Image 1 (cartoon, rainbow, N blue to C red):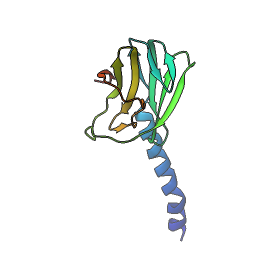
Image 2 (image 1 turned 90 degrees about the horizontal axis):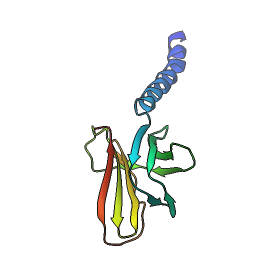
Image 3 (image 1 turned 135 degrees about the vertical axis):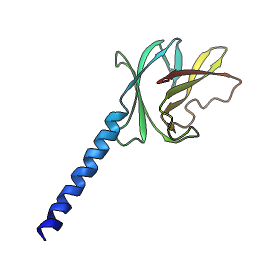
Length: 129
């Protein structure tokens, strides 16, 4: 009985430690975006941004280095290889500038962030290669 009770309390601690190790393994990635861009109707300046996974791995956060801009989106399994560890921001490039299209972190990716349907040329900014 004592062994069963000990295992009852020990198992959640092991699961919590494993989850913590997994989330800390995918730390924030710094990405330099060399142009102004729009996201969620806001124009953001060129510069350094941090991309980091949420604690459960089902969200991604984009934050400017000065923390003035902060966005969080849900991510789902994408088409990249399951072992892909890169961080990729894909932008739509058009006459008026750039719009953030998707954020990929590892093998997970956001849905399309810019809802406008227009002719574009995709541009990628990658980190972690």
